[in-house]
Length: 274
View 1 (cartoon, rainbow, N blue to C red):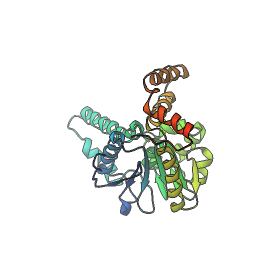
View 2 (spheres, helix red, strand yellow):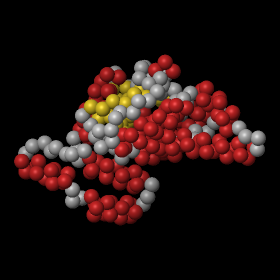
View 3 (cartoon, rainbow, N blue to C red):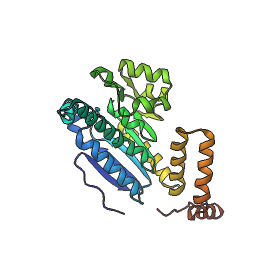
View 4 (cartoon, rainbow, N blue to C red):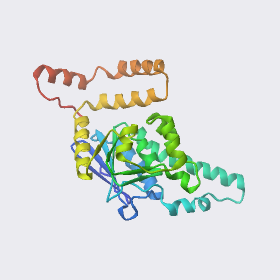
C-alpha cells in the first residue's frame, strides 16, 4: 500500500481496508479553511488510487463534524480574486469557485464508497460536503443547516445541485431559503441521512460495522456499482443500461466472480484481492 498522506488539516488512517479521513481542526469546529479544501482533494485522490482502500469513513475530530467555510477565508475571497480589471477579477472568482467545487467533487470521483459520520454541527459548506458522500449517518442531536442565505450568498459548491437528488425539492427550497436548523432525526425523516444513533460512539461503531460489510465484498464489483449509480443519477435509464452492459462486458468475468462462486460452493466467506 502507498504511504498514508501526511496532511495539516486532516488525519488519514487505515484498518482492514477501511480508510478513516477525519477533519482535524477541532479548535475551529473543523471549519473549512483554504488548506482543508485542498487537502480534502488530496486525501480522496489518495484513497481512490490506493488499492488497499475499499471504503472510506469521513468524520470530524472533536464535538462537531464541520462548521462550514472558515469565515476568515470567506472574508478574504474578494482580495484573493482581486484584479485591476474588474472583468478579470470576476473571472478569477469564478475559477476559485470552480476549484472549491472540484475539491468536494473529488469525493464523488473516488471509486470507493464514502460514508459520512456526523455529530454536532454540520453547517453550510459541510452540507455540501456530505451531499457528495455515498451515505450519511448522524447522531440524533446533530445540527444541520444550509446556512449560506444567512451570510447573504447563494450556496455555490454543490448543495443546491445535489440535495434535490437526495431530499424532496420542496424541503430543499425551504432549507435553502430559510437557513433554519434541523436535527439528525429530521434529517433521517427527509432522507438526508440513512440512520441516526444516540451517541457519537454508537454512530462510529455502527458506521464502522457497515463499512466492514462493504469492505468484505468484491472491490471490483463495489467500484462498478458506485460507477453505475453515479452515472445513472445524471443520465436516462436507457443510457445507464447501455453503460452497465458495456462495463460488465469488460469486468464481469473476473477473479472476484470466480472467488465468490467458489466460496458459495464451499460454504465459506470469500476472500478478495485488493
